[in-house]
Amino acid sequence: MIQQFNRLTVKAQLWWGKPLNGTNGNKSYLMRGGEVPYKYEGRATVQAGELEGFIEENKEHIIEDLEKLRKKAAGKAPSASMHVTTLVEAKGVSRMIKGIRGAIRHRIMKILLSKDIEYCSPSQKEQFQGTKEPTLLPGEHLMDECKDNPCPIKQLFGTWNKESTIRVWSDVIVETDKPLEKIYQQRGLSFAYVSMEERHVERRDRKTLQNFVEQYLSGEFQFYIEYNKELPDWLIGLLLEGILAVDSLGNGRNAGYGRVEIKDIAFEQITLERKLGDETNGKITIIEDEKISNQNDKLKECLAAWNKYSK
Image 1 (cartoon, one colour):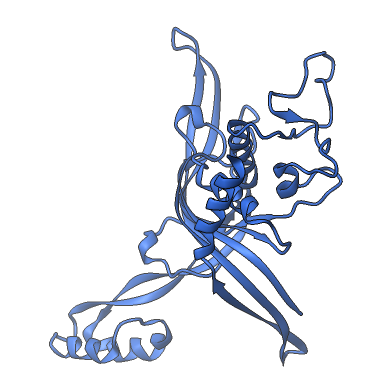
Image 2 (image 1 turned 90 degrees about the vertical axis):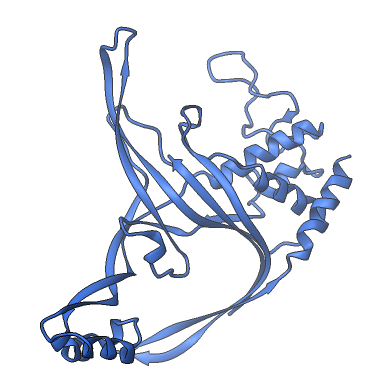
């Protein structure tokens, strides 16, 4: 099976983010997945006289030049200690970054408002339930009210009866306590630190009214926006401007949490092929072959098309 689609790959730095569900008053945790194995650069202490035996047992894990290690050992007494750099396996809890798609959508809505371009509201209801307060803000129309003349929000994000044109997902975030620069990177995985904080709500006289615990995420990660439908350049340019405008993610932004820095972006055309491989233990492996064609020149063209469209 062969698939062809376009992809925007975005690298971002999240500073003390809280991309999670709202607190229940007691504890609030980042979305947790299973444990994921990974390897990092570690160090073993070996006696010089036992180096050969250590090499024989751990040859596939040693990442130093073996001949240099042997020369180093030859200049030491047999009982002298020496350090050997090795690959060590660890496991970390997987976490999920939430809210990327929503953050981009909200930035795009603000951009459209600034350009006096109407867009779909997130609701089909004219009034809030139980009140007569209207749901629509200036510059909005009810979801799918644009019908056959779809607004930019509908074209990108769809409506209740129309699937979104774009797919948004991110790397699996793996919680680690290892130095990030020593971790061997694996495709589709990003590594981050997770911290927990006990917080409280207090009165003016500092008497505590409520205690609760929350978790925060800090690290660099990649997220991806994919689409296989032909989109006009101006609409891709609007999507790009929305991505570039993302500066926070998750809850707590008014308290200084969730700051995001967009580091870089790539525009790629992807050809993905999945085919049958060899049979092992009665099962046939699946081979995935991804070919990437870099189209970064198109980024500026799309932004220019959006600027021209929106004037």
